[in-house]
Structure formats: C-alpha cells, structure tokens
Image (cartoon, rainbow, N blue to C red; front, side, top):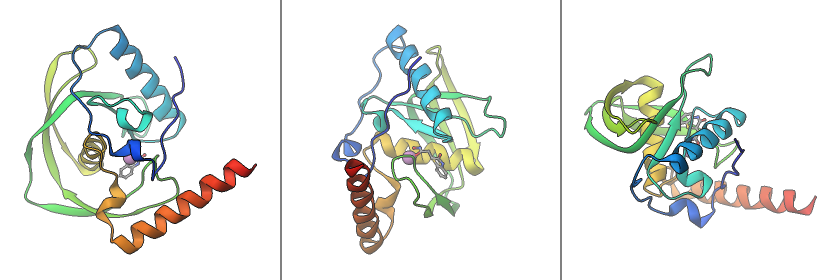
Length: 170
Ligand code: GNR
Ligand code: NI
C-alpha cells in the first residue's frame, strides 16, 4: 500500500486524456489499492487515475457514510444519461477549498469492469451519479472548474498558484 500524490489545478497533466486499461492484472489491482488508500486518506468520495498522474481509464469511489463501500470502475462508459439535469455544489481534491455549482444528469447507467475485471452495469442517481460524472470528466482531461465562467476560473487559477507559491516558500 502507498499514498499517491494528487495533482492540483492548474497542473497541465490534469488535461491528459486517459487510455483504456489493457488488462486488470496485478499492476492494476495494486494501483486500485493505492488509489483507494489515497482517496480515504484525503476524505474524498472519488478519485480518478488522472489525478495521481496515471493516464488510464480507472476510477475509485466511495459515497457511503461509513466509508466501507469501495467502488472500482475500469474503462467506464455511460450507456444512458437522463435528460433531467440537476445543479449541485461540487468540490475536487485537485482544486482544494473550492466549491461551486455544476449541472449534471440526475441519473445515469454506466458499464465498467470491476476490480476483478468483471463487466458490470450500474444505475446511479444522487451523489453517486454526480461523482461518477465528475470522475469520468477527469479521465477526459476535464476539471469541474471548466464549467464555471472564465472570470471565476481565472480567480481560482490565481488563488491556486498563490497557494502553491506560499507552500513552496515554507
Ligand atoms: O471528494 C469529492 N467530493 C465531491 C463532491 C461533490 C461532487 C464531486 C466530488 S468528487 C471529490 C473527489 C474528487 O476530486 N474526485 O475527482
Ligand atoms: Ni475531482
């Protein structure tokens, strides 16, 4: 097990488009373990491989209150998305301290391989649907702040760069 470091916006590597996972082998299972550990340690409800600088289509999620229901989605594809949309406040481990509204489909169906390499289709609504859409955006190189106005996004960018400078000065 190992904690992985999480890239922070505006790191250009966050805009990399991930490639499919070729095989759910020992390397991938070990990455899943490390990503789950990193997500739990950071108190996040999801983590995409992109955020730990691995550009493969793999995400881990746990939206349970008890933090004991890990969900592993490998090569996820949305097979259905509701026309009905909802705006909800989002945050991101790669954009710490920033929360703002993003419009997403209220319900989705997703086909993906699980941690054992078995194909599954899951239906999601509520925070799980939001989280899956947020994570799948990461795999496409998209960070949620890109849905905000250019003004807000630039303020966030400046704030993040300043925070980075401040920590580097210590
Ligand atoms: O921990 C997280 N919380 C969250 C809250 C609302 C909408 C999306 C998320 S995902 C985020 C973890 C993260 O950055 N995943 O990429
Ligand atoms: Ni995120």
